[in-house]
View 1 (cartoon, rainbow, N blue to C red):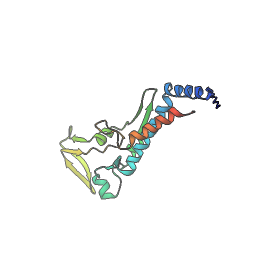
View 2 (view 1 turned 180 degrees about the horizontal axis):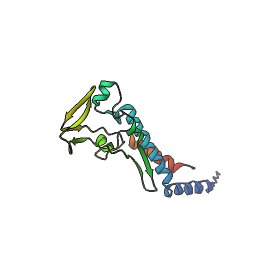
View 3 (view 1 turned 90 degrees about the horizontal axis):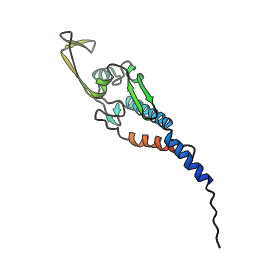
View 4 (view 1 turned 30 degrees about the vertical axis):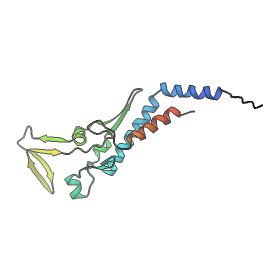
Length: 163
């Protein structure tokens, strides 16, 4: 005769911890915000959106710099916020959206815009900025390649913590 005895106290502890982790989501959201920030830093470093290269800027190409990193202020302005219900990433720079989404900038209060060009400036009525998504979510609300798996791993790790 074979007899098997199971001590359910470990199982009960594990299920209790899993339930606690699932109802206290703030640590998971903090982990997701950190991962979103890491993905954004990767994009600035690789000058791409999840591996899809950005269109090079004229200044970066001619001066050997990096696109979207003339002064480094845009990359440095990336911030995150969390609650129990969300993880958010963004920038407070007024020019952040035009670089992420792209669009046209038109002269409004003057007859032309002065655009740095070579060692001087060019006078233009309008300039088109191509979309260079640096956040891990593109203008259509889609996550970049690999982001979904990285965020899912953060969520699973947070749920399993302490098991």
